[in-house]
Image (cartoon, rainbow, N blue to C red):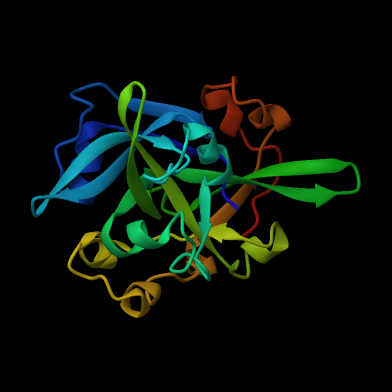
Length: 226
């Protein structure tokens, strides 16, 4: 699964990566410990243009009775996403990109769980495969998203049995294209990202508390896995 990630960037980097005017203005975006049920930036298609919007992490289907279902839908398994009632409509018509600079996963060891920060070796901004949905509740419209996961690559298999789907930049346009609705075509973009382009850096266990923030969370606690 993917239950925590980070995004440390700015408006110019977002524009360079996604060709979209963000909602950040000139304010840097520095979120070192992104947790579910928080408002995060996603990139989606609106009237043929890319837009950056804030959505709640944890997809709430339009038919949900209340928003609590979002705590169970932070991830969507790529193998079954096209058939699951909570995700199948969004998989066809409401895909998004979730900008990130890294994600966290925990490896089970004899002495407890060791958290790792997984990121591109280049340190560049990247994007998870996401789905978004609109739900109307007592307070009005609430937009939410989920992150698609898949089987691990060789690096991630040393840490965990799942990993988030990272969409290569060359496929951004196709992933966001609402005209591409055939599940078989969309499914071809769900794949494990090449292990040789990633590194996994052990970090301190403070990352486990969602209230903790700041650059100190990503200080290495050992040698990286590559």
